[in-house]
Structure formats: structure tokens, C-alpha cells
Length: 270
Ligand SMILES: NC(=O)c1ccc[n+]([C@@H]2O[C@H](COP(=O)([O-])OP(=O)(O)OC[C@H]3O[C@@H](n4cnc5c(N)ncnc54)[C@H](O)[C@@H]3O)[C@@H](O)[C@H]2O)c1
Image 1 (cartoon, rainbow, N blue to C red):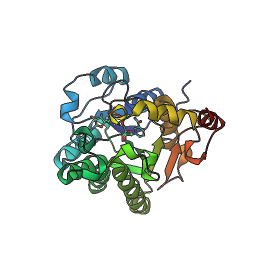
Image 2: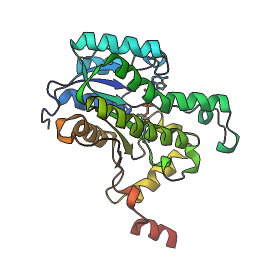
Image 3: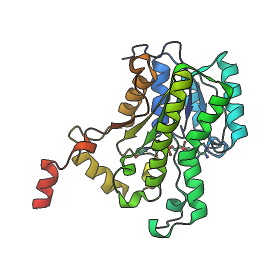
Image 4: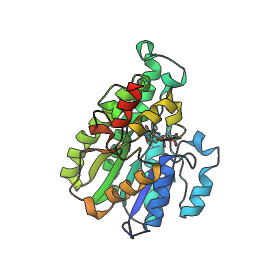
């Protein structure tokens, strides 16, 4: 059931690749809650054409932008503000890519060239997006920016590899830029730390099936779905959370604060 929580708001959604993507569910939910949105992704991801279905369902234009290309980002913000006839109220950063994982490189033997690209695409890209918006003064006062992250930034999950470092950096940029943007324009910036979710990026993690089942058993509420994540992000884009900024917000069914569950103990006793 929709509540019109985003009525009159305008947002840019990065990272909807296919209908498994968390960003896809968030775009649908923002539209249902009354927002106008622009969809964007890397030109190579758009070539698959999947996004056109989402664009149609949400009445959104699709504007290509490689998130590590400053000219692309400038053009994205120019075209978006032109399309909306005004500034932006919210941004979703839902982007992750590990080149070393893709190439099957173990954490102890990463290629540093790949690593730089991973950091740029998965973490510094948030700085790039915010800086572009900052320089163009493209976000309205009390605007809201959310980036998706994972608890491997705080705790070791061996097969999460260099993405753990990327997520730590992403969360740090959230705090640092969050400070400056709050002072300048009252714009808030947070990360949402989501449960493991079956998506293209998620399934790229080695041993993902074991990983997601373990998290399910270790979370008192069970794993949070992409749809649940979309609901949570809507609240963060809405005016109901105006004083929340610079936070890493766990959205994981209680996983982050659970030491052990009865279900896991039972398994260990077998
Ligand atoms: N799936 C999970 O288990 C999980 C858990 C916690 C957090 N997250 C995070 O959620 C976010 C979204 O991932 P997802 O699981 O929905 O997978 P996904 O593969 O659907 O989304 C990743 C997106 O990043 C985009 N991208 C990659 N390189 C880009 C570039 N250079 N420019 C612009 N876009 C680019 C891809 O095209 C894709 O749309 C990521 O930050 C991911 O780390 C995922």
C-alpha cells in the first residue's frame, strides 16, 4: 500500500541493471510513492536493454552515465534538472563492481590496477556524484542521498575480498561529505547496510549460497529482501527522516547485533 511519502519529490536512481537489482525495486517503490525519477547506469549496462521495461513502468527517462566519468555525471545532472524543471530531492547510489573478484584473484594477491578501479567504481564514485551535485548546486535543501553497503566493512567475510575495503571507504565518504553537505545545504547522506540479496553483483561473491543461508539463520527476523530495502530507502528519502545523516544504517533483520542463534547452535551440535 502506497502512502504518497514522496509526492512532489524528484530523484536520480543509479544501478538498476535487471529486475533482480535492489535499485530496480527501489525505483518501483519511489514511483509508487509519488516520486518522479530519472534512471541511470553505465552505457555498457544499458545495452542489455532490460532497463527500458522499468523506464516504461515508472515513466522515467534513462540517461547513461559511467559513474567514474565526470563529464557523464555533469551531463546527467544537467539533463535531469532540465527534465524535472528544477533541482533534485534524492539520489540512490546502488553501484558495486570488483575487478579482482571477477578475475578470481584472492585478497592476498590482488592486482593493484584492478583494485584502483574497484575503489573508484564502488566507493569514490559516491564522492564524484556528490561533488558534481555540489558544484552545480543541483540538490534541494533537505535533500537525501542513500548509498548501499554491506557489513563486510565492519567484520571479516573472507570471500568479500577487496569489496570490504571499498565499502569501508564508501561509508567514510558518507560521513565526510555528509558533514559538509549538511552545513552547506542541509542535505543528508547515509548508507544502508543490506542483508545478502540474490542479484547479479551479489551472486558474484564466492560461496554466495552458503553465505545467504548462514545470514538467514543468523538473523532473528531473517534476511531483509530487496523489497524491504526499497521500503526503508523510501523512508530515508521522505521528510520523515530529516535529521538522520552521516549514518551507516543496518537493514539486516538483526544480523549485525546477533552473536549466535538457537538454529546455528543446533547445527553445530549435530
Ligand atoms: N546483493 C547483495 O547481497 C548486496 C548486499 C549489500 C549491499 N549490496 C550493494 O547493493 C548495491 C547494488 O547491487 P545489487 O546487489 O543490486 O547488484 P546489481 O548487479 O544489480 O547492481 C550493481 C550495479 O552497478 C552498476 N555499475 C557497475 N559499474 C558501473 C559504472 N562504472 N557506472 C555506473 N554504474 C555501474 C551495474 O551496472 C549495476 O546496475 C551495490 O552497492 C552492492 O554492493 C548488495
